[in-house]
Amino acid sequence: MGESDARPDNPGHLYAYCDEATFKAAAGQTHAVGALLTDAPVTQELVDSALDRLRSVGSSDSRDIATLERGYFHASEDSKNAHSVLCTEINNRIEGEFFYDGTRNEPSVLVRHARVPDEEAHLSVMFQGALIHLTQHARALTLTIEGRAGFNERTATRVVEALYDGMEAQLWKQPNIPCMFPMYSLAVRGKDDPGLQVVDFLLWATNRTNQDPPRTDWYDRIEKLLSDRVSFEGSPEMSGGFILKRMVRKQLVKYPDEALPVQDVANQDEILEAVCLIERTAREVAKLDLPSHVGHYKDEVRSTFVQLDQDAASLSVDSFRRLASHYVRLFDTLPIFSSEDASDPDGWRRALLARRLASALLARNPWTLRQIDTFILFRREHFQSNPDWFGR
Image (spheres, one colour):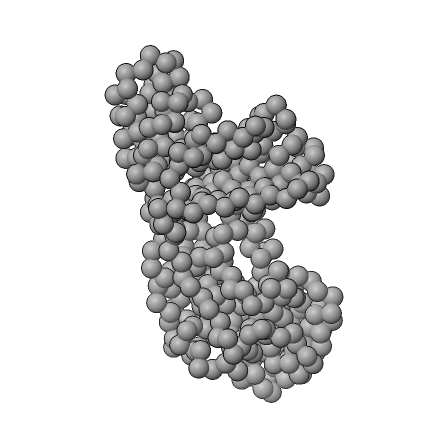
């Protein structure tokens, strides 16, 4: 990647709608989070068409009258008539992927099983489980959530950042897998948001299948291209999802076969080479005209180097962790290497080795932290005399 390079904008935008629900049943309760990913926003037109269908039924059911008066659908309060017209519009109009992550049993049981401190933390874990599929996409994302006392924009930001932090720290154990960290913006909306009405129905229909006995009527009415469900005997946890019409467009990332599997660092020379590569790459990124889907990283990378270069020979473990995070998050999302670079397997091997080392540092791997101390001393000794080693 040269200093004058600029990657083309990643086309399109991704939309995610996320909601949570507790479904009470005789055997306990199902608590789940659902996320709908689409290439296009869910519009009011879908809701208006469903309401027109419901109005044409001419029902005297008090629930139908209430739905029409409030002007939006809420699955747990709506009638079969309302479920039917909304399901029809979803089948006709929605293209995308729905994912859910949840648990069965009482909250106290869920907390103990998942080894998280409280119910709010467990909710965050489930949101991360539903949203982990975002890391398969590099496109800029708008995430819409329902505003409520227990889950708001600040909470959602913490959830997504915790997901990103966890993913970047896991890649040293799974170094052969691409992982994206898309730019996202949050939109906090009410129950009347069209996308939230759709995900509310999809999640409600899915939750009913986990009752005892299962009630699959509305889940079966949803027209699914593909579906899957995952649960383990003796565990209250469950997850799954389905595709509506077609999958969301993905930016395919494939590492050259010649560069795989990614090896671990073998000696101190490889460590020094890898960490120099991380700093050089981050400095090059800071000079690029970055495309919109990663444009937010430019100021972050520049800010890191402003701090580092104020005292040119300084480098702390914390400041290098920031560099490591920039490298990991941009590696596939920019991407730093592209398919045109496949003719350089040695360069790929070095870059992937550096990504693995960066991830191990972010995971606070004790051995890696000790080796970084060696690099800090190395950098102080050579920063002025060999600036090209560090991309200066």
